[in-house]
Image (cartoon, rainbow, N blue to C red; front, side, top):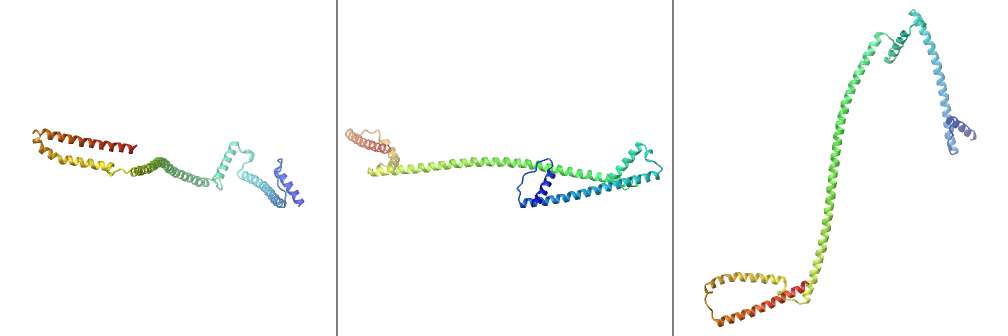
Length: 278
């Protein structure tokens, strides 16, 4: 256990370098996990070192082969490495770079032309694809614009509907309040009517003094007036005749007494009704 802790500590110091190693809980599980990581890391580092050594060795071999091939090529064409001018070397470098970009096996014209044609076709195809993508992008933008406009319209409609619902809710609430007020008023009037009816019953008021009875009496009087109109018209020719003075005085006195009695009775009814209304 102590050996593993030492290995883990050394590995953490190596990993973090100049930075302080974060604190961690030292127990069997954490030590085992970190120990496995340390072993894996060391193994990976060794593999990387071996891979680097292999690449360095291959680089040296390729460099040696390249120098040998270059020497053979120059000898084959009757040239020397130091005998090439700088522009010639630059042109050869450009040909080499172009060949690498076009991925051709040599720098002959027969290899360049197909590669250039393929590259041209690739460019045309890319331009065609780009135009297609531009059209699709334009269509998508139009759809997005339409969607934004439609969304704005839906939002406006939703705000209008919400406002209408709020107004209707306020109206409905007001109607409910008015309905409650009318119900309370109706109950109050019913109660007051009942109390007034009980007062009338307790005072033993005659049915002839009720409002309904007075209305009926008024209607009867109006009907009688209508019935007496033809009689008045028949008596109009005799209106110029002079009646007996004694009989006329008797009739006048009787009419006065009846009128006084009717006035007194009417005043009593009016006073009684005023008392009830109070």
